[in-house]
Every structure is written in structure tokens, then in C-alpha cells.
Amino acid sequence: MKSSGRNHFRIVLTGGPGGGKTTAADLFRREIGEKVVIVPETATMLFVGGFPRLGEWEARAATQRAIFHAQVALEDIQGSHYPNRILLCDRGTIDGAAFWPKEAPKGFFESLATTVDEQLARYDAVIFFESAAVGDIAIEGGNPARTETNEEARQLDMRLREVWSEHPNFHFIPHRGSFFSKLEDGLAQLQRIVDDNGLLQRPS
Image (cartoon, rainbow, N blue to C red):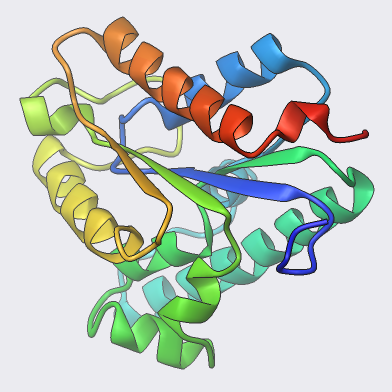
């Protein structure tokens, strides 16, 4: 049992669009097996399922609030259904602050009656995958819900890193010319977190 009171260890994989976090999560789950449970990216689930994606300020703000509440529910459901597992969250509750239409991140957290510290405390570790757009590499493909240009992806990457880097167990995986090398870096960091916390020795 974690000191937070949770019955599982929660790691969030985040970063700008096209960073490789989703691929890394899937590879790690395949490598470790049933000890790892993935919490899928909430925004992708909603948008692919037909959730409206509008440009007006109020619509964008409402969208981020919906994503936040769905993210919380998904994490709580997976944590309850799979006790004593490693939860790999494909993005976390804080990500919406980078997509908030204005007054971010303060306005995002105020609108949800929470704080950045409260949301950071939901996670035991953070691994940040820097967007490939930082190296001016195209990020199209792979995710049907992704609409950002490279410049937008770079801006999101910076905003996300600014907020998430406040976590005491923050790990940064920089962009590399080789996507495979970057994935190896990310997977190695995941393995270190698992080993340092003795997560594979815990009962299922």
C-alpha cells in the first residue's frame, strides 16, 4: 500500500504530441506482463468516440473539464479493479492545463476547484517524453485525434514540461535523432522506477 493510501503505484507518461509515450507504455506492458495496467489517453478516447472538438473559448474550456473528470474516473476505476499493480497513465489530470484556452495553468485548476499540488500528488512518478517536433520531425500519423502542427506541438511540449517538472519524481526523456534510442531511454527509466520501488516483488 502506498503512503498516499492508494493500493497501486501510479506512473504518468506525458509530453508534447508525437513524443512516443503511448508506444513506450504498450512496449513496457508487453515486457512486464500483467503487473502493468495501462490507463489509455482520455482525450483520444473522447475525440475518436465523437466528442465535439470546437474552437470557441467556452467550448474548449468545457472540453478540458470533461477530459479531466474522465481521466480521474479512468484512473480510479483501473486502480480499484487492479490492486497492487503498476498503473501506467497515458497522460494525467494536469495535461489539460497546457490545452486550456487562456489564463493557464491557474485558470484551469481554479475552474476545477483543485490545485496543481493536489493533482501532482495523484502520481508517484512522471516520465516526460519530449515531442519529436522539437527536432522538427513530422508528428502526423499514429493517433487519429492528433491535429497539432509542429509549432503547436512544440508550444504544448514547453507548457506541459513547465507544469509537470514541479513533481518531485520527474524524469525527462529528451528528443533524439533515433526514435528507437529514445524509446530505449524511456523504457530504461521505467525499469529503474520499478526496480527502485520493488514493484515486481509486491503481491498481485
